[in-house]
Amino acid sequence: MTQPDLSSPPARPAHWIRTSTDLDGAIPRLRATRVLAVDSESDSLHHFPEKVCLIQLAVEDGEAFLVDPLALADLRPLAPILADPAVVKIFHGAAYDLAAMKRDFGFAVAGLFDTMVAAQFLEMPALGLSALLATLLGVPPGKSRQKDDWASRPLSPAQEWYAAEDVRHLIALRTCLLDALRVRGRQEWVAEECRALEATPAAERVFHPDDCFQIKGVGSLDPQGLAVLRELFVAREGWARERGRPPFRVMGNETLLRLAAERPRQREGLGTIPGCSSIVVNRYGDGMLDAVSRGLAVPEAGLPVIRRPKKPRLDRSAERRIELLLSWRAEPAPRLGLDPGLLLPRRLIEILAQVAPPDLAALAAVEGIRGWRSTHLGRELLAVLAGVDRASPRRAPHRVRPEKEEEGRSQ
Image (cartoon, rainbow, N blue to C red):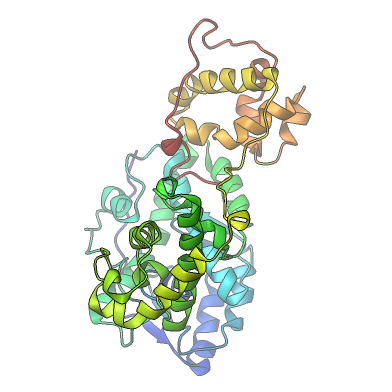
């Protein structure tokens, strides 16, 4: 990839936006730009429920703005800018930021460009922002602060610098990536994926008591232990909300499992459970014992049973199409320089196998297929779906480790 001659924007202090006056003063500057870099910081590791604690913005000359939602209740003046498709909004790994900002502020975002998606379509070896900035722009990586408590105030100078740097170079990075995409004729491919990302739904956390049965190791519990675990799980959710701390910081899943397995009836028994420190026992001991008692009081007829949801059974023709598509995608993926999971994700493979579109028009109408796949791979896909395994008619289906298949891929 040819690196353009791009100099880093001059380092300068970021402008804090903490009041409506600050925001009103920044809006003309933000409206005047045609390209806007955007990022956000949340507090999911430290507080519960999580919230967006900082929004970072940067314009073409590297001027950065730090918007403080904890101090500024009304962010509505930003909404028209973010929703304007004529203003390009540059994110890196946009899905999480979009979901969080839609949840907290109701923002709609149009004109999105995701530098991570662009890097995927250029087959970059590392997709993290620090790696891309170092490789393409020569920006040295700084210390990661992703685990910081972004709800704390005031932020340290190091945190302010980190937050501003996360957006200060995004516009130059987009320019570099766009140049490379144009050389390979893939700028429209990325544009399609980014339009789809704009529809990312607002983040939503719905608590279900039976979610406790997804905890690793739950299969070791008997039905009475499952009832105790569910009561403890519900109690922990309440304690987390009362204290504003993530549930895992209140009590770990392994501690819940041990409590459900041993079912102590006295406070002395709690102290033998790993994770039940004296502080935890003093704070939640009575509640833990009450939860254990409630679980033990569940009658046999009401004891929970773990029922794993079963995927609908596919007919043999659909299963065969899945095998053929998995085998086929291993051939064009290296030819196009794309990861197989990006070229044709498993979720699309299963949809195509069931729908079995008969022609290009029907293929293009399949949700998620995108125009770039239909245009550049459509005839090959139709041949495979018709049972013609052109890539390797005698080869065993290519297997991809499920946990790697979708990792880091676009929606």
